[in-house]
Length: 347
Ligand SMILES: NC(=O)C1=CN([C@@H]2O[C@H](COP(=O)(O)OP(=O)(O)OC[C@H]3O[C@@H](n4cnc5c(N)ncnc54)[C@H](O)[C@@H]3O)[C@@H](O)[C@H]2O)C=CC1
Ligand SMILES: O=C([O-])CC(=O)C(=O)O
Image 1 (cartoon, rainbow, N blue to C red):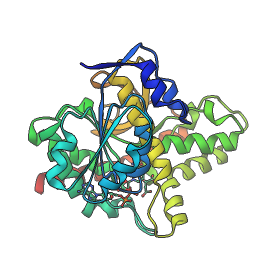
Image 2: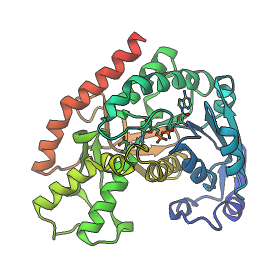
Image 3: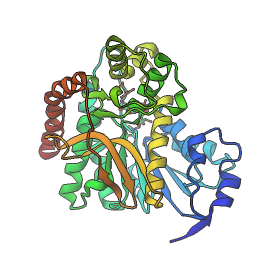
Image 4: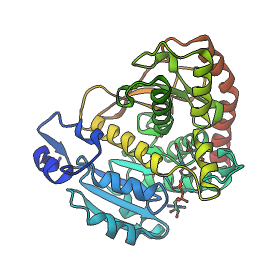
């Protein structure tokens, strides 16, 4: 496998990068060449995500695919003076080239919500988009780690799994629903309320990625704060669950979270790359095939490694409020999973 020196990656990759998370990964002398493909790269999430992946020194090739607009985005991002080579691909006949040799494929393709819609209202359009993109992934880069951002994540990940099963390429270690934005929000909201430094805060968020299926485990937050009441925790939980809707309403018809999502997507892809490169103890929350509850897909902390998921970590001790939240979310999440599986079987 081709390797390049971390020093050269650092020199040209992050000398002026503001992204502190990129700086934490240099624990070996050299890093392998890695190709990252973004599907939906010309969109609201895709564009800032392309920029963030361009400044990630673990990326050597960045392929930007969309049904329209990628030549411009690729030309723009390619002028950033970092190590990776950028190429734009547009239209279905270029999808194979975008995917070939990819180590990590990130999927923010699909329509976003408008005020008054639920994530499930996006199912009819996005299910088909994710399905067709996953058919291509199975064909052109069956070993890639796949990061699904397209909503409704609770259903699109089961759809992707079914497509890969049908193609004979399914590996549960390599399929991820990106729920990092829930963690990012929980950290931000908690730090502000508890008046603790946000950079030190850790909060696991489990379950799924819609409404009450988003379950932040504030009882496990570090650093611990003793000045929050039960009411404060309930308000923080609700704000985390409604974070996406807060942005949809503020954007008033111009889409949903794009910038914070690109940030979250870049953190998660960076974690996948670190895992692939053998960095130890890389742990992030993600919606994956799981047996920690009776549901076949569930978000929890996962340890990432050279093959993707090394270990799906358990829920840990829950407060009574969290236990109640867990039982409440199960029927919703189960229905979304079944809807995805049924769609994949019928279409
Ligand atoms: N997992 C999460 O936490 C979050 C998920 N999302 C979801 O991400 C998705 C994208 O959101 P935005 O970027 O704001 O939407 P957008 O509409 O700005 O961009 C979507 C892009 O996908 C492209 N696209 C459509 N069909 C495609 C196909 N077949 N192949 C490749 N590209 C295709 C469009 O051309 C467009 O450029 C939405 O479904 C949204 O709900 C948004 C925020 C957070
Ligand atoms: O709320 C939406 O539609 C987009 C999303 O998933 C989020 O921001 O968490």
